Image (tube, helix red, strand yellow):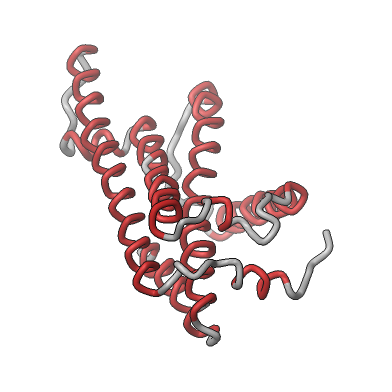
Amino acid sequence: MTIDPTAFQQYRHTANNKTTLPRLLLGTAVVVLFWLGTTAAVLFGGTYAFAVWQASSGTAPPSGGAVQDFMTSPAGILAALASFAGIWLGLWAAMRWIHREKLIALIGVSRRISWSGFLKGLAAVLITSLLSEILLYGLQPDIARGTIGLSSWLLFLIPIAALTFLQTSSEEMLFRGYLLRGLASRFQNPFIWALLPGLLFTSLHWS
């Protein structure tokens, strides 16, 4: 894979004249509203469906409340990951109706995915994740770990992997696509277009 040192400079100038700071802020608000709406629908709809299923199957009532019981279940984890589809929907709406561009414009100058680069990145993530797990186990062998049967693990492996990709890709597209591109097209100072999205991303994941 050949790295073009001018690729980012080309990318930052692909934004049209409708990518102004007020429109960027409005678009970000639209994305947040879509995400909150999707999250609320998934949370309350999933909790209701889960409670109905528990009642019909004669399962013991939730010990920590209906919402908490649902969110700590495998179905709740899948639902939480699925809620990030709201970010994709919000980005599509913002690009389509506020900036008058296609969503694919956020991918890059070529407007296509480099699958070879994607696979290399995926391999790097898997390797580093495996090494970090080995290191964590070596440093804290007595750390509490949940038990799950092999059949259940295999059952949820594919949907969790797919929805995890949905979550991570939506965040990358928002922070390192929409916000970074929009700010970089308006400001030359990298402390603005690089630091602000990074700080926002970090603050939302701080725990």
